[in-house]
Image (tube, rainbow, N blue to C red; front, side):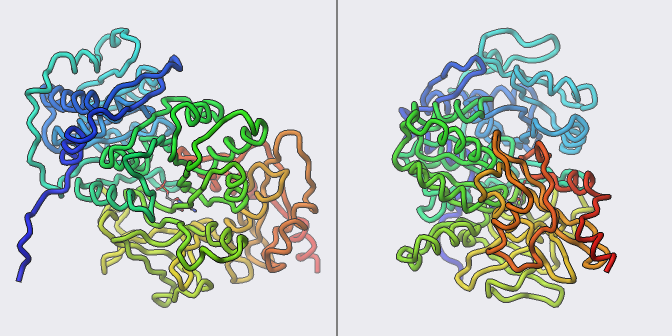
Length: 546
Ligand code: AMP
């Protein structure tokens, strides 16, 4: 027997309509390229999102057409987040940090019909524009200057339509609302196509007290780019809840961000660990300079959060909460809140738990798979994490070569090697391709990296596998020292030694100037492996001699 409840469609226009009815007077703030602040209200934002939808339809954009953005985090990008799907089209966020080759491939593969581009990002577009088929380029500018020849002007298009002509569309919740390409470190980028339903449910989940905990009284500033996994869904969550929204524009340096946190009384921000390492260094240098909101929370993810960061941020009253997710998961997968059971645990125990990636969020199932099937959640056994859930991709867009990531029984293979505590806390040990296998046993490079980053002289650390004649692979530590600090290899190895079995410890540490990164800020270990591929450690020399 079926229940008797309406089949209400969970869509982005439904979120927009609610924002219009309830939060019209709430504020949205954006940092402009000239560093001044732009302010308007939710009422203005909704009006302009509707105008964008109408303007796109007038240009011939039809249901399902892809409309791309090449933009920083700002209010017009938010308008596109809602305006494009409200026209029935698919918002495709292009990652401006990718190479022109990748951008060409992605824009052509997605068959983008229109591209919205920030005036300040025209030089990025110029590098691949002649290789793509988009019918219209729309330039977003903030200083009133006209669009270059052959391109359209965003403000002018909006001025030529009237929001009163906009009618909220009847959209099926299973229709595509947005798409984003994974910036995989191997193979071609692959497209993930989000449904309206997935984004709506993901937003409700992210808003929950035990997840991001975003409410109407919050002031939210996503540092994570709106071109990466929908800024972790934060603009959608904030609009659903009516939180004040603050956008940093192109200014992601620690001082600009801290100024904005202080001025706008930001209560929730989010981004990858690299950003917060910079913020910490600025705070440590001038501890009295910024008066931040007392309840500032920071969901941090994208790569592992070193325990030292949790501890050091606490000193400044900033609560870091670790999250794990993937572009393929809209992107939230786990969230690292302390459970009731852990509230009275010792501080050390609490930090150890907070350094894990957290427990699966609602409507997301997790399992660990090994060579011989499913592996227990005992906190020790390692295997590949597989997930399924209400906002997990069911396949890649037009990419049969990615089919192997989806199992026959309906799970997505994350490529992350994990252990899971009996209490459900997931620990990411490695990417499957980064894991180090020494003498047949696995060594977690992430664990070693986090321990090294706990040393006061270390700015960043990566650990990779290098070939070893006796053990097949051994870990090599690669360290960037903080400016003006020194440390020797022996000192660093001694520092981390108490935390690990002896055979886990790197035999050698190399010091370099910077660690190469992917377009989304993760360590590019492939480049490091390439750089050190002929490396022979002193241990290997001595082991092959004996
Ligand atoms: P992306 O799709 O670019 O967001 O990358 C997803 C990948 O980032 C995951 O599969 C993990 O390998 C990594 N990742 C994300 N969050 C974390 C985290 N908190 N700790 C360790 N790795 C993470």
